[in-house]
Every structure is written in C-alpha cells, then in structure tokens.
Length: 382
Ligand SMILES: [Fe+2]
Figure 1 (tube, rainbow, N blue to C red):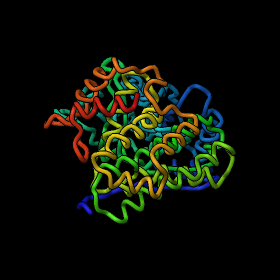
Figure 2 (figure 1 turned 90 degrees about the vertical axis):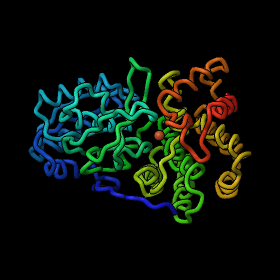
Figure 3 (figure 1 turned 60 degrees about the horizontal axis):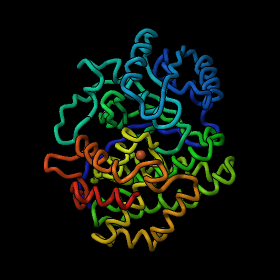
Figure 4 (figure 1 turned 180 degrees about the horizontal axis):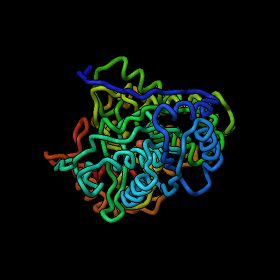
C-alpha cells in the first residue's frame, strides 16, 4: 500500500429523517445562511422544509437558486455577490454535486482575495497557476442525489462557459463542517438521475481500482465493495424509487466512494479527465460521460494490463455485461448515441491535452495515457 496523508473533518449525520436536524446543526455554524440550490422546482419541497427548520432555530436565510449543471464560474460569481449583499455567515448546499460544488465555490469566493474566481481553479495540470482558496465561510451540505460525494470531500468541480473548460478547485477549506445525508430526500429522484448518480459513484472507485496502486488488499476490497453495493441496489431503486434500504445503501456507497477512504495514496482520475471534456465540448452529462468511458477504457486496457480487469470480471461481472448493465439502467454507453463521431476525436483529445496532460505530455494514470492511446480509447468508445 502507498503511503498517504489522510484528513476528513466532516461531521456526517446519516439516516432517514435526519433532515429534521438541519436547524439545530445550522445554528452551530452561523445565524445567516445562503442556501445554494436549483430554481427548476426539483428540490422545492426540500427547500421549504429547510427554510422552516432554519427559522425555527433562529437562522435567517437567503436562497440563491441559479445553480445549473457543471456550475459555471459566472454563476458562482453572482452567488458570491448575493452572499455578500445578504451578509451570509455560512452557506448551505442543497442538491446534487453541482449545487454542493457551487456552494463550496461561493463559500470560498466570498473570502477570496486574488481577483477573478477562475484563479481558484486548477485549469491546467501541466502548468499549475491556480491560487486555491485558503478560507471559506462554514459549509453545510445536504445532498439530494447520491453521486459525487461532494458532501464529504474537499473538491469543487466547476466550468467556464467562455473557456469551454471544466476543472476543479481543491482546498482544505472546502470541507463541509456538517453534512446531513437523509436518503428520504432521494425517493423522488427521476430514474435517469438516479442511474447517472450510481454510475458516477461506481466510476469514482472503478478508476482507482484499475489505475491505482496494484497491491492493496483492503483498498481493493473497499473499492469492489462500493461497486457491488451499487450494482446490487441501483436496479432495486430504479424499480422501486421508495425502497428505503436500496436508497440508503446507494447514498452511503456514493459518499464512501470518494471521501478518501477508498483511495488514500492514489490520485489518478483519468476517465474523469476525459469525461469532463465530453461534457464541456459536447454537453454530455457527467454520469453519461463516465458510462461511455468506463467500458471503452476497460476493453482497451484489459489487453495491456489484464490483472485488475480480470479480477473485476471475476468479482463483479464481465465487461460486456457491465456495459449492458449500464444500458439497462437507461444510460448511453457509446459516443455515437450522443452524436459524437470519429471526426470529433481530435477536438476531444486536444481538450484533454489542454487541461489534463501533465508536464511529461501524458495523462497521468497507471500506465500513463499517451495521445495515441487516448485516440484508440475514444475510437473504442464510438
Ligand atoms: Fe464523478
């Protein structure tokens, strides 16, 4: 096992009905909350409950409901202005990864002294010029979509519409003080979002399992355990959205998949790096981008480095069946289903090179991915 430094200070309150603790917990963080979420009505019922619970606890609140997928830095900049105008002293993210990531970036943006908020972003892996935030307002996260694990990690993934880029902010100050994980909030999720969330959560551990350190008994069991849990419970939740056990398992599996426990000592996320470009250049949503990348990646690298793929096939299912499983969950597994053709591949490769190739001119992975390998993987994904 590799050496590592591990820290995760998030207080997690987990279980059905725990939303009721929002007011009491929020009052420990401040008296004026900026609530960061969506304005499309998808979480209105939850927001009404949260605002009521805050008021009961003597916490004033202001909603900022402009969050969109792959939160654009321009939206985050507006959120910072709203937070300042309201004199918010803490921030609550309510929703999926985009809402929680926006909440993080806004909480840091309020106290950011280095100008343009895009300066916070690691926009290039080969030339790290980012000035990550050192301070943020206290954060509470209330996920309504098990997927990104943002509720219990220090990463915020954001986009720049102007630059056609999607990358991340990474800073200690982005850890939430408190995360309330109430699986009941996920009962009303549409099937497609449930499926994309589960597939994203699988990818977080799968790409560490196949690309990370080759020898680590406990970590590999942990990674495979997260995948097995999702593969078992995702179809149950899709068939019966109010199945409490399935929703509970999915929520904790998604959090544990990317809160550091399953990947200490490993930092490779090459499939995500390609997925981000599929999103920023072709508008493919995050879960689908990984649903496309995973089978293609596995088929390509199984020929080069068989061991982890053979173990996946033994302990989870054959790669072809895994691709079929994703399709049965209602998510596309090929680029062509999303209108991407072979002529788009050079642009995608260029996008990955710009953001994610390192100083050695490769995509960091194990083994490293060269430009030519990336072309082959994308052809496999067609
Ligand atoms: Fe992800």
